[in-house]
Figure: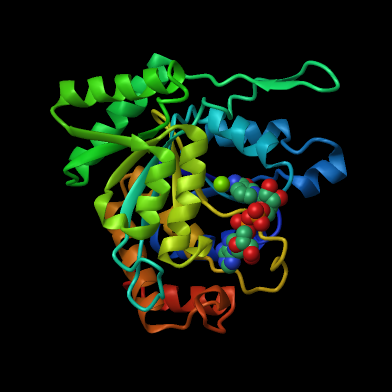
Length: 328
Ligand code: NAI
Ligand code: MG
């Protein structure tokens, strides 16, 4: 049966990088695409940034390709991650030949907890003066993330995992987070290390080669992955996969980039590599490998988009990626 992929460009450069990526997917696989919408523009038109039919399409699809939304992001992406029961956001960051990088040896993956922490949405304004936020950490979600991290390390030939936390300050919540993941890893015979997330930011900036698989609470994963993007050449390069037990939502780490939207110069690499993760998830391993090889050789030989010092537009870069795919 043909697999269905929900396609949700969102706002801004989502309308440039997602159509470009669809051309790549069409060249390597035979999916039924279901086009849906969400984000600022829909909210302006209808008052609702996330229409019910979009949630339904994402829930029913085998996988979703998402671009980025704008100011309504939290109203869109958080419920959609829930809709696919996604407990982890997988964010690989590596360098590529031909792309200038602050830290050319970077090759790591951030596994970001996707449902809890300070992004659980439990905020209150208690008075004119006082606002509060409740940080949610459960043993069950930490265990599920720990199991995933061990599976990921095993499947991808990594020696072990490093847990980022701040259990000297958030003793109860990050205490539970680290202890649970340490316990899972030790039961599974996977090497586990841990470190304070603030110090880790410094170590990552100075020598990322010390890291392989970094397991993070939600906010720390968000921040450390943008840091990692800065090490490898920018946000235009970082893909991600929101993985659930049997569905997934694939999206670039970047946002809708209003500063360059409409100019046709957005780098589609992050979204095309997110599509490669989608292909992996649906067991189209050969197609995923072909897409990655085509992207890597295009980055190496050019043309490149302006964020990487080139002058090619989104479509010209994508044309060259497609030309480099094997004939089907
Ligand atoms: P951003 O990621 O949109 O942009 C940051 C900088 O990186 C900008 O200078 C932009 O031009 C550049 N950039 C990002 N992607 C690029 C690409 N593919 N090619 C070339 N350059 C690229 O983050 P920012 O500016 O903080 O947020 C803009 C909007 O996006 C906000 O409304 C924010 O809420 C939203 N956002 C949405 C996300 C999502 O939908 N998952 C994630 C992050 C931000
Ligand atoms: Mg972010």
